[in-house]
Length: 331
Image (tube, rainbow, N blue to C red):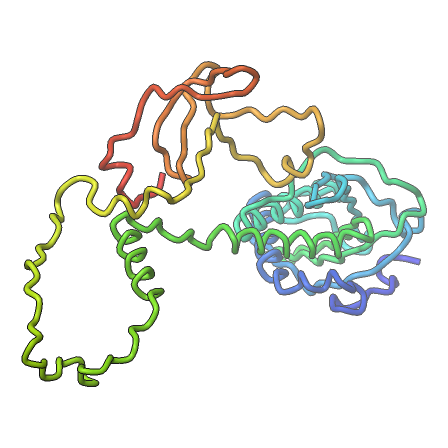
């Protein structure tokens, strides 16, 4: 058996199964791979029609040579292997290429494409050994042609499970990107929340009772008997609107969430998934630096960590200006 006589199948749902869901990304990945090889060879190249096949590692017509490895979400590090079809050449742009070098260029190009499309690359690393000579492999046949009609065919080989794992990887990153791009609702100003509180209180009051005898249905008073006169009430004046504490009593019973933040950091998804008991996460604050005190997620003050009896506490040292605390802006 040779690579030419190998049973290659079109890249669709039949040979790829659940992994076929990544095929919509193939045009972008093919373009990225062509650009990567072109830049390395200093010669424009094109990638032909993609076909796929399946085989045990030890049964490949020519040896599969280990190249780089990569890591997908929630999986062990996976290896990648390559081989050249000896029936074709091994030159592009006058440069002689080995299978492992071309496979490295393929992975590096895909890594950059995923970083651009999804915000997370493939986490490339050193080559790994095959798990077993009988390990089932997924083969991608990539015809590469230069502008000078030099042609070679790269057999790009992966563990059989990679197609489905890559599909899950893409779906997870798309979902995370969608959540991250959804803007959080802006905080409601204190004055607006107070007005809403009053409005809700008014709406919750019971309906007025039916008009009593002696009063018309439209609310106008009926004629009074001779021995009855209307009471004279003093005129009500509006409460001052500019004084401090106006209507603040409406909010005195509202419960707020207080949090003390000792620091933050940013981690790739692969590092989060790798956390185990005993792992250490380095934060963005120096030891002894003041901690932030947040009310409902908004910075209000800074302080120092103390111990009260057997509990942690925080002693406030700086308070954010009142105008900044009431401004509905993010951190």
